[in-house]
Image (tube, rainbow, N blue to C red; front, top):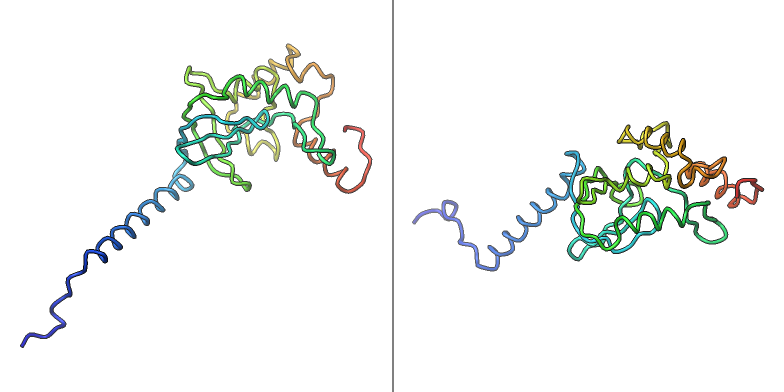
Length: 199
């Protein structure tokens, strides 16, 4: 009689379905992890909300993605008394909404930040980038926070200089405060009970 060690049992249909499902889940997990390792990735969907001048929500299928526009920082809109908004914060939110709200777009994304937001360029489908238009219109800064480590598009510095020279948007203010300084000098000061002249 042959030894049973040479014969494999035939899997049941349920066991085959379970193995197939496990294999598909592993493949899906690998594909989801790939963008973080392999450079840029695309997100396609409809813009369903604009929170401020550099943040929107994209509905891709049934999943909502909070998106932070890459390379720019717009004036803060504010979050109650403890975190008051900046001048031009609401104007920047409206400018981004006018460009993108309700549109179906395909974004070019780089990574997720510590808040789980996708960091993306926002092409508008006509060859223009919302990121660049916000800076060119004086509705956002080229993001130089952290010595410029968030500035993926070096051409934004020139667009910012042009907007400043033409006194567009926030550049009408004689001394606009960049949002990265506002968050620190205003919000942190209020949080610790210190007085601050900028807010």
